[in-house]
Length: 254
Image 1 (cartoon, helix red, strand yellow):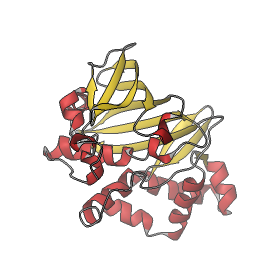
Image 2 (cartoon, rainbow, N blue to C red):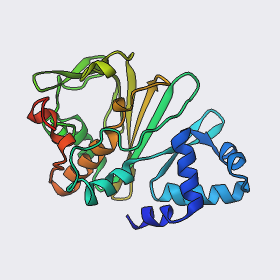
Image 3 (cartoon, one colour):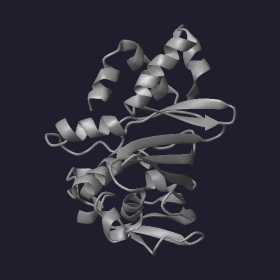
Image 4 (cartoon, rainbow, N blue to C red):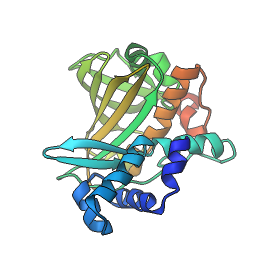
């Protein structure tokens, strides 16, 4: 976490994160124009933020767009705040962005595990229930087949597995059902990518096809899910924040 605190210590870098919070998915040119800095200066600060995992850059056509990654912030919250806090805020940081006609959210985390070990944790129902709110996913993921995630005696998430390419890429449509405020939205899409980096993996979650006015509940849980996944795979232990065990204890759990 030293890199995260070092990155946040600089006011210019905090200003860049504020800009991405207000409008996610900005190019280097857009950030340069907004802050009155040289292209080299903005690029230098972005490299520090990327190294800390606070910003994720992805190619979009001819441009390289930059996204705010809230996972490191969620890990800080879980380490020093959640044990003293009341219920977990479902959306740790509310992001607002626009890419063409839909919104895209990108989350990234590094996990010390082989791609195969990480893939198993993502696709095994018993393992996934341990870090994704106690939800039980079924049936086994297969390309072109529907799936559901059940908790508290009812369906919480449903969709279809669009791509299944172990141990690298999983793409699924995503329908939220846990309350009327999210159930009214059209299906979105979740892409999970695993890239080996030395003895670890970079795990990237891209939640896209979200409407511009998307309820933050639709994507706000990913930082906690990924933090729980990292904890489980690396230590075998479970996060016990109220949100992480919610559906495993019934829908009236805190």
